[in-house]
Structures are given as structure tokens and as C-alpha cells.
Image: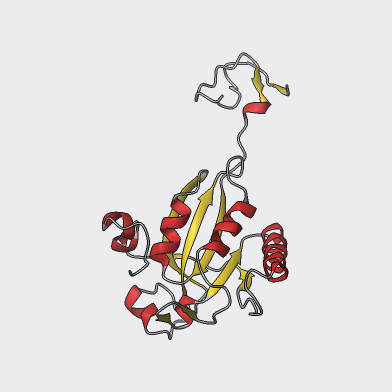
Length: 194
């Protein structure tokens, strides 16, 4: 078990322990330090269903519907629906990497949409519905590319080519409040129309 030693001089208290106290008698257990929460951002069609899917993943701290990847500052839903802002409907996921890995999130991403249709998911058509992974660091980029290549090679998409973009994360604009948790607010489990 790792230990860090600090001067227990009351005038110079050490860092707070896991319970918020700074009275740590000069030592604390470094094994209790939690990894920082990480971000992942995905676009996979209408953000209502994408957000709901990620909210169900154990280890996901939050999932927010919003807009990213475009050229207009402060877009609204109405702006993005014109298909002229360049934004995708996307979901920004905050996750605990000690519980949910980025690779697990990628598996969810691939399973909830068709990555072989350009600018379209089901009846929703336009670049705002494109399939995109917005990576936050080079590790996410490498993992996303490897995951895409494995899926393509697996034959699960048949002879179709995966058209998912893998691009650097851009500024994320949170969508209007009525879009957050939309399916849960309306008592629905998915966007599927039956």
C-alpha cells in the first residue's frame, strides 16, 4: 500500500483525506486516490436515444445532449436543425475510468446506431445526424481507430464501409433543458418507432 508523508504542522495542513478532513496525522493512503473523471463525446444520430444509452452504463457519471463540431457559436436546436451550422447532435459523457473503460463506451457507441450511413440514422437525415467520435486525447483517438478497424474486419457490417468520422473534440454546447433526459421524461426506453 502506498503512503505519502506530509508535515503535520497545523499551520500547513496536508491535503484532505477521502472524508474531506485535513487532519491526516501526516500520512494518507495513496491507494485511495481515485482516477479523475474523463470525458468522451459521441454523435450517433438523434441525441435523445444516444444520451439514454450512455446513461445506462455503469460508471457513467453524466451524459448531456448537445451540439459540437460546427462553426456557429451558441447554436440552438432550431439552428442545428437547419443543417447549416455544421454541428452534430452529440452526447458528452463523463465517466469513471475505474468502472467504465473508454473501450466499453466505444462498444456501446457502435451498438446503438448504423455507422455505415452517411449523414443519416433511420428517418433522420442531415449532417447533424452524422456518426462521429470526437476524441479528447491521442489515446482516445488510437482506441477509436482500433475499435473501428476491428468492427470493419469483423464482418458485422457486411460489405458496407464504416463512415464514422474520428475527429478532435471541439467546443460542446449543451442542448436546451427539455432535451436533457428526454426519453426518461417521456417514459420511453428508446427512440424506436413501432
